[in-house]
Image (cartoon, rainbow over all chains, first blue to last red; front, top):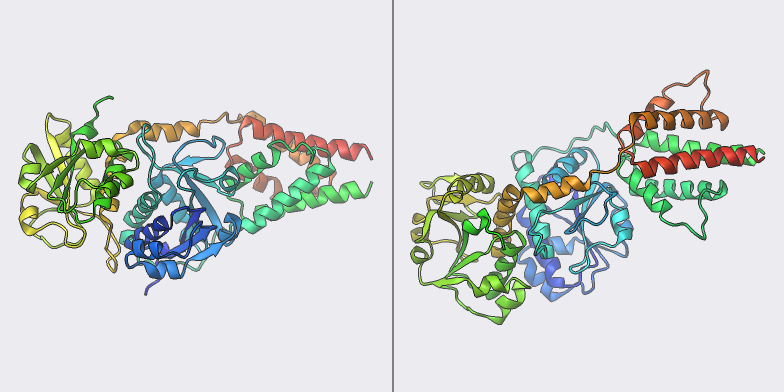
Length: 247
Length: 247
C-alpha cells in the first residue's frame, strides 16, 4: 500500500465509554483513507461490539495503540488539535474543521506526525487534556442540539481531510525538513524548567499556583516553537539559574 | 423556532434495513439543524432501536413521513439529488457534496422544497430510484474501502449544509478568537525588557548580539500575546531582576 499524507494523521479517542463508538470511528476513518488510531483509557476495549461496528475496518482496531494518558498517546506528534462541541477555553485559538485541516496539512507534509483528539461522549476533553492541545477545533452545529455522536465527529473531520487531500492523496511524503518543530516531550521539559525557575525567583508560589502554568502552556502551545527557539528559551532559563547561583 | 433555509431540505432514506441507522440519521440531521425526514419502505419501523439511537432527536422521528415509494416521498420537491458511494450511473451528472449543496441552496431559497436521497445499506439506490433523481452526489472516499455507514453519509451531507448556511456558527468560532491583543508599543517594551535581562544574565552579549533578539521577536510576534500573557512575561522578567539585586 502506498504511503499517503493521511498516514501522518493520528486520530486519538480519549476516555471513550461505548466500544461501539470506537468501532464506528475506525470505520469512519477507513472510509476516508485514514489508518492510525490511538485509544486513551477506553472504558471497555477490546470488545466484540467495537469489532462489529468497525464493519471491515478491524485492521485499524488491530493496529490501534492503547495508552494510559493523552500525553503518552501524542508524544511523537508535533501538532495536536483537540475537538470541542462547545466553546469553553477562550484563550486557546479556535478553528473550523476546514481551517484545522489546512493548518495540519502544512505540518503533515513534513516528516512529522499530527493528531486530532476527540473526548468523552458526554463530557468531552478535560481541561488538562485541552491544555495539551495546540489549538481547538469547533465543528459547526445546531446551537440548540449540539449532541454530535463521537463517531460522527470523527467522520466529519476525516471527510474534510479526505476531501482536501484526495487530489494529492498519493503525493509522497517529503523527507526534507524546513521547520523542525519541537515534540510534546520537549515542550514538557520547557514547562518543567520554566516552573522551576519561576519558583526560584519567587514568581510562582507552589502552594498557590493559580492558573499561571496553564496560561504559559497555552501561550507556548500555540506558538509552534521550532528547535532553535526552544534552545534559546531553555538557554535563557539556564542563564538565569547560573546568574542566581553565582551570587 | 425560527424557520431557516434548512427546513426546505428533506432527507429521504430509501429501503433502510437497520432501524438503528434511521435513529442515527435523525440525530445527525438535528445536530446540523435539519428537521425533515422521509422514510421509504423501511424494513423495521417504528422501532425502539431507532428511538434509542436518535438520542434526543425523536421529534424528527415523530414527524417523519413514511412512504411506499420514492416517487411519493419526493413528489412535493422541485429538485431531488441521489447519493452514491460508487460511480455507476454515468448518464446522470455527478456532483461533490459541496457542489450539490451550492446548487440545492439556489432552489431552496425559492418557495420550493429539495431532497437528498440515501439508499439501502448494502445496495444503495436502485436504478429506478436513481432515474427519479436530477443529479447524483458522490461523497469522496477511500477507493479500497468505500463502505460509508448510512448515518455517516447523512452526517456528511448535513454537515456541508450546516457549514454553508450557518454563518453564525462560523462567526462564533471567529469571535471566540477575538482576544485583548497587546499593542505594538507594548511588544516593544517587552522586547527592551527581555534584552535588558538577557544582558544582565550574560545570555546576550551587546557587542555580539547575533540574531538573538530577532528570533525572539519573531516568536512573540506570531504568538498574538494578550494583555494577561504580556503582564505575566513582564512580571517574570521583573522577578528575575529583583532576585539578582537581592544577592
